[in-house]
Every structure is written in structure tokens, then in C-alpha cells.
Amino acid sequence: MTIYRGTFLDTPDNPFTGGGLRVDADAGLLVRDGVIVARGPFGDVRRAHPAEGIVDLSGGLVLPGFVDTHVHFPQIRAVGGLGLPLLEWLDRYALPEEAKMADTGYAAGVAAEFVRGLAAAGTTSALVFGAHYADAVDVLFSAASGVGLRITSGLVVSDRLLREDLLTTPERAYTESHALAKRWHGVGRNRYAVTPRFSLSCTDDLLATCRTVLDEIPGSLFTSHVNENEAEIAAVAELFGGSDYVSTYEKHGLVDRRSVLAHNVHPTDVELKMLAEGGAAVAHCPTSNAALGSGLFPLSRHLQYGVRVALGSDVGAGTGFSLLKEGLQAYFCQQLIGDQGCALSAAHLLYLATAAGADALGLPEVGDLSVGKRFDAQLLRPADGSPLAVGVEHADDAEEALARIFTLGTPADVHAVWIDGELLHN
Ligand SMILES: [Zn+2]
Image (cartoon, rainbow, N blue to C red; front, side, top):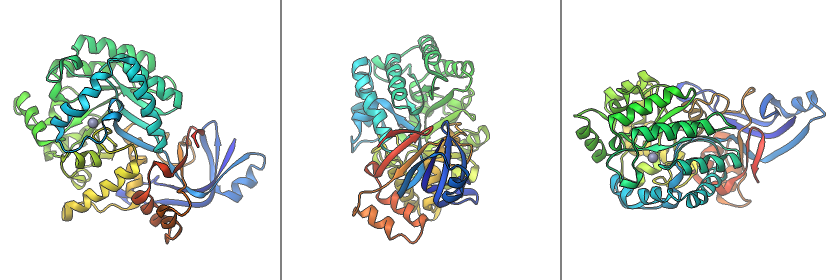
């Protein structure tokens, strides 16, 4: 067993429903086989377990590992394609990279960059949009397993409107999805996600197949996109006989506790009600929404209807892997909405980047650092003399220090990352 000594910040109680930031300075967390088995003042934990090794993390702040609920593995080399709205951006930047995934060697290079990028940003769990090619998804799971990340991913499927080389058929999607799930679902920290790109590029036959696959793989998740951009929403309505976007999934039984839908920038009240009643979660991706000019996320309305929300980086439309940056942008977004915005504190941002994501992804074993949870954690320790180090040093309290971390922090400030108590990088 190991005792981790340090200052720990987490949000075991939802700050949107009366909880707040938990701060334990000079605490000790006793970890056995990756699980936190005791927690308290360091002196007490030390006295109770005098023979155990100590890892001293003083001089920084320890947070739970981040949970990224929406990120595209094939798009890391497409980050920074500025100046276009969604559908044009897809054609110009994203889909050409998606097509390159047909080359498994190319995909392996991207997968290595991708998992390194996630881990370096302090992200320990992620729901990952895979590739349209089964071999590329295989390569992603291999790379994630090599690093030890907690990944849920799957084959991305589409059978209309995209470029020809990205299309499949319901039959092929069924066979390839099952083959991947058989290889990876429940193996190590990997799980399978049924992943139609968006209903814009999927026929009802393909979405029905997605439901079948989801039901046949117990413990799998469902993920896709919804209500991101006005032109996209209009095109979906036209294709589905005037239907709203959420209904295109809901009519196939794809809106429930297993579902994580990205964006939802422009939902109707009826759609929010449907999401809440089904128990689906929404991945809020604020830098992507700003970069593509998709709009300002109506967080207050989601909360009002009881829709679960967590953060996603949405690389490559998003502007990087760091959920610190997404948290800051989420804050900016709510400020810009004005009276209808939801005032976010540092505790809210941490919750959205950790415990809310764990809840959205059905990972009750992570998200905070309570006894019984897995030790998925990150040490934030900015370089001496950097603006962040100065800010943290002069903060009045831990919540103010955390606000400065969200404001100024980058992956360069993530000094170390653990999953199940295993150190990923240092
Ligand atoms: Zn996306």
C-alpha cells in the first residue's frame, strides 16, 4: 500500500445542487491495489499505517483525473482549423483526416499522439469518438491500453451524405462493431461505445442497427452529436420529415442512461424534456462551440430540466485536450449569455471536468478522491515563478487557487498523472 500526502481538491457533492469544493490540506490517502482505502489528516493515516511507503505531493495541488466526455481520436492533426462553421469545417479539415484512418499505419501514429495528449492534459478517462475504419479503432484501443487510459470508444458509422470512403452499411456496421467489442469491451479499462457520427449522416436502418448492437453489448455506451449548428439542425429536420434532432435518436431507443450526446447548443424545451426523462447526458464542448461559431450553450435550461451535463474537449474542433481550458471557456460562455447565464465558480468547473463526467460515462469508481474510489488523480504543480505559481501562492484560499488554475493552467502545469494508483508520466 502507498500513502499519498498532499493537498487534495475534489467535488464529491454536486455544487449545482448544494455541494461545494472539498479541500483537505496536508491529507493522507492510503491506496491499495489502485483503490483509496483510507483518507484523513496525514498524521493520522501515517500513525495507523506506519509501515507503508509515502509519496509526498506537497508543493502542488492534487485533483481527480479529468473525464473528457467527447473527443475525436482521428482529428488531433486537424486542431486549429479556424474560420468555418460546422459543415464546412467538417469537409475542409475533419473528414480528410478521418479518411486517412484507412491507412492503419497512419492511424497508429495518430493514436499514439492522441493518447499521449490526453494523459499529458491530466485526462484519465475519456469517451472517444473512434474512426470509420475498424482497424483504426483497434489501433486506438491498443494505444490507450499501452498508456493505461480508461477509454470508451467504438467504430464511427455513417451510411449517407459523407464522402464515399467513409460510408458503411448497416450489415457491415453490425459485424465490425461486434468484432471490435468482442476484442476490447471489458478488457482492461476499455469499454465499447456505439457511435453513429450524427443522424444527418445515418439512415433509420443504420440507427436501428445501432440500437441492436447497443442492446447486444451489455455495459456499452451510446454516443453521437446533437443540435450543434443551425444549418445542421435544419438539414436533419428536412431528412427526417420535420422531426426535432433528439427525436431522430429517441425513436430508436437511443436516448437513455447509456447515451452521451455532444453539444446540444440549440435544444427545444421538448428535446430537453426528452433528454431528462431518458436520463441521457450532454457533453458540453465550449471551445469547439466558440471556434465554429456554433453558439452559446444554454446550461441553465439544461439544469432546469435536470439534464446531466459534463465537459468535452471535442478535439479537433475544440482547441486542445485541456479540460482546464474547456472549464474557462464554459465560464466565459455563461458570462456572455448575461442574465440567462449560469454563474460558474471554480468548484462548478472542477465538478464538470471530473465527477459530472464520471457520472455521464457510468464510471462510479472515479470522479473524486473519496474512500472506495480508484486513485485516478493528477498533480498540478506550476513552474516556479510562472504567473500561475504566483497566482496560487497568493490566493486567499483553495477555491481561489483553483480558479487561478482554471484561468492560467495548461498541460505544462500537470506534473504527474495516476490511474488506479499507477503513475502515467512525470
Ligand atoms: Zn464532436
